[in-house]
Amino acid sequence: MSPSGSTAFEKHSSTIAARRSGGEFQRVDYFGLKDGESARVRFLEQGENLTWATSHRIPTPGLKYPQDVLCLDQEDDGTPCPACMSDNREVKSRSTKGYLNVLWRGTEESDLSRAPIYKRNDKGSPEKAPNGQKIVTGFEDSVWLWKCSKTVFEQILSKDKAYKGLMSRDFLITRKGAGLDNTTYFIEPAVVDGGPEPATVADGNLAQSKFDVVQLTTPGTYEEMQALLAGAPTGQPGPQPTFARGGEVNQEDVFNQPMRSSAFQK
View 1: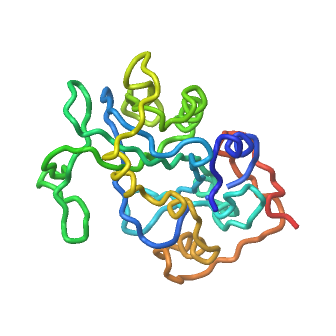
View 2: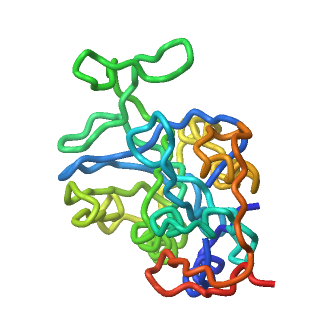
């Protein structure tokens, strides 16, 4: 079971340790905005169901960029994780991200980014035009997964408390900035000074197609992590490197604080 909820997150924020995911394949449509765009959404989780996970960035053969791989020590209890024991500083470090289902509105409103309907192949993946852009055939309300940064997740927890539950109303999400270091998200009620607004029956029906955040934030096995570090795809054996469990493990915490060196000492 993955950690979730504001109480556990606050405990996690003051702890020190390391994470990514195996499990069955789950096709995911990721919510995203460009610099200057805004979207109207209805969050589909709140309170103790707000879920996050921490992960390592691991280079993968055939992929241009490293992939997020859930650390095995999701509970910060010293569970042995090969990535945490890596000599590669970039692999050893970790980051925290929130995993949130949002109902992205596709109804037409001026100046808002709308939830697109993609043309898909027989495997359900969006097809792309010659210019590399996904082919959009229309717009409609639909469920998307927002994989957000730690900073954004902390803001979401704050909004959840302030409005007595994120699911109480629609929110506007606005992105300012295009890079990793200069991007800020603003999250405010869609109706200024508006009160709680129950979700519609249609919203409830769409919510049945939520992505399984528990599956998406459940780590794989020790052996799978070893295989990934050795350059094998997830689930394939590959060479199994040996990691020393004793001695110092100078890890980096997601909150940029020194990690305990004794996380894997006996």
